[in-house]
Amino acid sequence: MGKTPTPRHWVGFDLGGTKMLAQVFTDDFKSLGRERKKTRPQHAAASGLARISETIRGAIREAGLTAEDISGIGIGCPGPVDMDRGVLLSPPNLAWDTVDVGAALTKEFGCPVAVMNDVDAGVYGEYRFGSAKDSFCAVGVFPGTGIGGGCVYRGEILRGRSSSCMEIGHCHVVPNGPVCGCGQRGCLESVASRHAIAAAAARAALRGEAPHLLAETGTDIANIRSGALAEAIAHGDTVVADIVREAARLIGIAVSTVVNMLAADTIILGGGLVEAMPELFTTNVDRAARKRVMPAYRDAFQVIAAALGDDAAAIGAAAWARHVIHEKSSKGSG
Image (cartoon, rainbow, N blue to C red; front, top):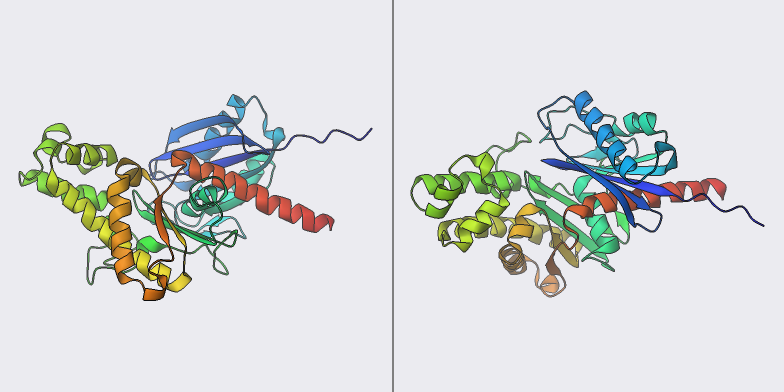
């Protein structure tokens, strides 16, 4: 009788802007355990890596496994990533320089590690398991603390020679606009991220134009989160709805450029803002993009909300890790 193969387990990790999530999956992507902690973007890389490891170990314990049971780890990180070397390249919204995330986690857990951009991870998750199944070219736009972008093209993550790509949040959309976290002016992220929307909403509240937001949340930008914005709109703060529509319009302008360049057939909108106000975002992004694309592409794409919510990046990272690690092992044995 043949020897029973050892079950394989995969960890998917999402290093989000405000929260980090680790999940353990079986080989067919049934979730066995998860652990969530707050991200501390102001902390140094060393303490950040320690917190990542702690979160992964918590998920492994909840799954009833040990580190020796893990076949590979996939981790989605905000900002540019050198996917071949597993290095995070000076992320604009973390107080980190270049960090060798892959080497650190391989040393810690003794298994292969696939490092990728967090939105790439989310888009790959949606491509494999969510709203973008069977897409030829799926592009994701995830407005949140920043605005991340990712692309899956014919089943593979679109990337550059030495780093991830599709940094749509740093497309220039406003001439001489506000300073962005990347140091440039007028980036999409500087005018359409949650922080930018919250800042505009706070100013409106101070002017007396958003009474519900002022009464319930105040004008501290840190407290004006996606749910508070959606609630203010539902209670009649029309100026907040106008602010969100303008942000969605600007995202649509950036999306039109991507569609013209890649002939993308699926545009996925995700993140907390979209989850809180899906119709407001999808309708206005779709309208702005469709108005500006070349006629040949006008009826060739769809704009849809992500289906997997907070799990998209974690399951996508785990699935990508399985894909690349299995591919490498197959080539090695071929």
